[in-house]
Image (tube, rainbow, N blue to C red; front, side, top):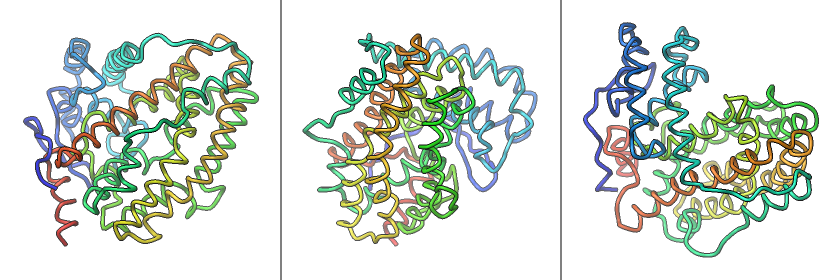
Length: 362
């Protein structure tokens, strides 16, 4: 597609097999550090402090790319690049500043929420009410009925930011939980990781979908192509998982994520087949139609419900995590749909986006 979103002035850095462009002074400094310029670490706190002054940290390109890169140090997701920096106090300080700005922006936009009583049934009922399907336009319905092959590839590239690391963000919460909630989370995550079968891991299945669509399954290949809010969706769940004080939000996020996945995955699978892709591309989404219908019950009652009963003080965070998931995922999907309805690409102007265009042309 043409008319991609303009990118800001950038510098490109090579990290393993991928190239990533900076989106501002802070992400430029972090990329410089990761590629060998250690002297730039001393400037990070001052650069990060400027993030607290941005209008909306959830949609700010420099903030979201910077958070993504700092989290990548812990995931090892960019060819293990920068592993020696994971526990550097200057980078951790910068990350904490960015997290405060990001969390504040999300809380401000989500607004006040009604908390259910800390009983499993009532918490589950509240979560199912928050996530119940609504009529009207949606990204998954658009893909099912209207998207062309180029738009389908854009969608797959956008979702590679999370899905090639599927389940990892929520897995940070495993050691932060105990008892019934921990057991329920492990039950869900065992399925996400293929139940012991490497080829059934959802990350691996998604990589197969990318290859079947003619796209690159290297993690990070399409970072430059995606807008800030796509990075924010992944950063949000990572922030919740990596901060013990936000473990309730991590549980609420996972519950909402699972509860809103099954039906959209069915629509996406339909759309992928409609534009000519085969079972190798749609299989990932077929898998989630059935799996997430089961997971949503476990997440709502056994995970979120039991955590609320065992730690009643976390009920507010559980509800906030669910609401934040719905909000940020919604922003990301709405932006793609808005651009497509205007006859435009959902991607940023970048070499990564142009590589997708070349795939379509081929």
